[in-house]
Length: 127
Image 1 (spheres, rainbow, N blue to C red):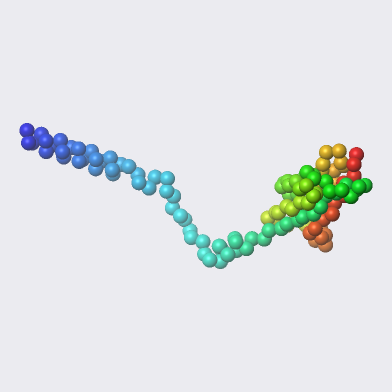
Image 2 (cartoon, rainbow, N blue to C red):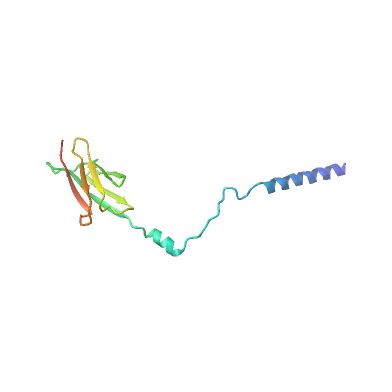
């Protein structure tokens, strides 16, 4: 009888050991790969960002136009209640087209250039 108890205990120990060895404690953990140098980290944090802001208003009444959509470089933003907008891009805006639209107004497309002010005043004409 004592032999059976010892045998059962050894068998249980071996099963636990086999289960532990077959389990992969590092499953899902991937190697970090090449570590970035301080220069690479610094260059990434100093990545340039370009921004453009302005005001959208009615050509005839000079009233601010809330809710106008402003699209550039695939990004869209909307004018606030005072007709103001601000949009940021990680790519240069020079040479890109800015499209402004609002229901019951003619859409306007503006090609941006380097000499252009970063604070735009855009008048929309009613249809």
